[in-house]
Length: 342
Ligand SMILES: [Zn+2]
Image (cartoon, rainbow, N blue to C red):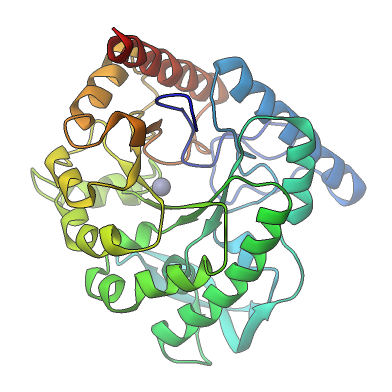
């Protein structure tokens, strides 16, 4: 990006209410068959228009064509039985009924490639595409086959790499892997989590990102955050390894939380997508609040490496709130861009 402080979002945006029930994760589709296929493409047009109207620089699909950021990708893999469900504890935080790995996993067919080609036709702006990270995928399943989180993650990395290469060929500029699990399982991150990410990006020429956050603004996450004390130093555990990794960009939660921003010093040299929008509240930030978070981050990140962003996805928010937050993000970045030019 030549423009200073290019704005983007962490990933998901609210879906239109004619496509899926609003303000809900895993929301069921309201259409089926050809209507659903066409409805998803219309939603892609709408979400792109909303991002463009707000002046967002790096646009995305807003995850309009997927029901959930992890499960939709897994549904397109061999080796996972969605009928056979087990209850497991996700992110060490909440119980969920999840599918079972019953045999070797591999990618059946391209998952998002046609959607990415469609989005590419609609815009000349840079596109970022999010995929689930291998560790977060492992943490959203019951494994009755490999019986090893590390082995299963490695196999997922190969499938992700196939998808990522085709997304790159479709014209995606930045491929992002969502790894909220990186904020929970520190030893595993350092032992094999980052190695799996590097396997997932092998051979890519486009830019690559990892998104690590404290989750959507759902109750299980806000309750968990209350137990984390007055300073959230989780990033400290993984940043030294990430700084050494081949990943280009790191997307982080930096606004309204208790993350001491001096931890950013540990990834100096990396490009950082600084979360300057809180996704756990319907209160829309003022441009000045956004600008203040960006100014604080600039103490640790060179201006040409700072990408203003949201803390996490905005799928569960009301649409007008998400729109307001996109506008606030752009307006806050405008303020700081002017200050840097002065
Ligand atoms: Zn997130």
